Image 1 (cartoon, rainbow, N blue to C red):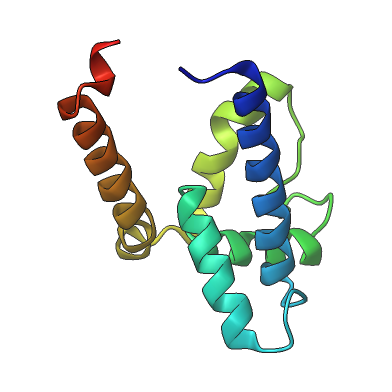
Image 2 (image 1 turned 180 degrees about the vertical axis):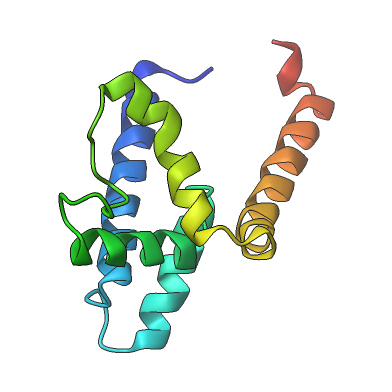
Length: 125
């Protein structure tokens, strides 16, 4: 059973991981562009997002901050923003092959671990 403290730790690590993804998108985590690309892709896949797509949208955000072309601009209510933001982003930077290449491996691993844990009896509790 996941405790509240474990949940808070997982949320904190998720947040820290996204900070590292952000640094990789700006190519400031490491001197090597390849290291930034590799770490950015690995952590992005754990966040179930495509690094190249997120980076492309984030570069547009810096180019067009707080204008109509800013993909991260909140120009409506928070609820509407949460439900439409990623749809708007996906129209500009969507690449289905890159998405499944990034999201597929962690989904397969997590599903396999879930099935394995359930078959080992931990799912009965």
